[in-house]
Image (spheres, helix red, strand yellow):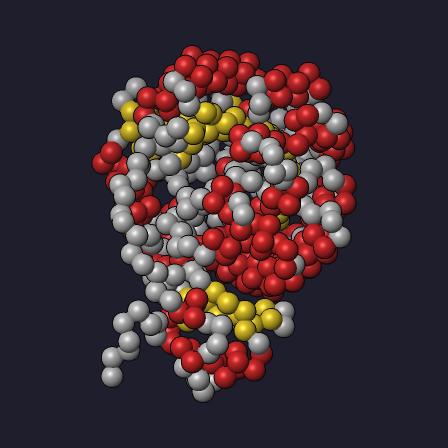
Length: 482
């Protein structure tokens, strides 16, 4: 017998049990609902059809077909690699200290300005973004500042907006530098792996000294300045720090910033710091402890942003299929010091990701696979229950581990899946969280995978503040570029 049109088959309903709570998710529409334990177990044992379960109507309901609109595939996010050099020697650096297999070098101010012109001339978007990356971009501060002024000038002239962001190890964030960046409205991502011992083991100066003390002082200074509201502290965990919860708890308690990104390292499997499948239980437990801390802080009126959790929560509240988690090669393009165009900063040096240069522009033939992946998703995600929410993981990781864009890196998939499971639980544990997010879910997230506003800002938002003011005040970073 054919199933009724518009009703999902049992295989299209994913049942999840997370820390004592139970859920049903529609793998096609991204809708979900929490169930009581008795009902959940009846469904799990196939003793009841999903359409007979009270409370599942919204999950089972087929979405009406929305009119298809032609979406621009022009870049809107530019990553400027202004310095292919660094003043730290981080053990897990995948960029060869900024060299990407080449030599130490810097982008000229002229090339930086030409890259800004490329963005404005290539894009039809009203809202643009420029991220300064390295190496360490503060080693080429004047090129950063001059091109940022050029970008702001063009935006004003052309009645567009442009957000400016800089990713730094924090060593060069002197008070005068912070003031100059603040004057131009920059947001910052500053690297700090957590407690002194963990940080200094992985992020030393060239002479072997640890950098924790220096960076902590710069973050404390930034926190007393207006730009402090636009700082994200970003940490990295490796095989050696897979039990990373104490390091994130340290960052939360130190309050260098309300905004934290703490992400796994993805390195060639031969690297001694690369994560392994055997590390997965420790990583999952660290995320569980972190989810409990997130909930406790929200309940106590002192919430913080952890970008990966915030992103998953927003996607669950929106409950709308997501086109792509990664806009590399489509919405995002990176520019090297020589003016070569790559799909993103992490793919610099990969022949498959080289998409042209500033002189000739984007090579649409080389870009086509990236556009097709963005439009159609990954074939390797077709059977994943999370495909409508996740968006397929990182393109560069797919190339690094699977030699192509078609299949995601499975270990990364497991981490993303675990965070989504915990995000469901977090929404159940903090009833006010869903309501706070739902009012601003459209502005807080996008189908390209960029979370724009930390969720604590949703709760603290003043009703009479203009939308422009809201975004500027709480726009720390798109952490996917960090």
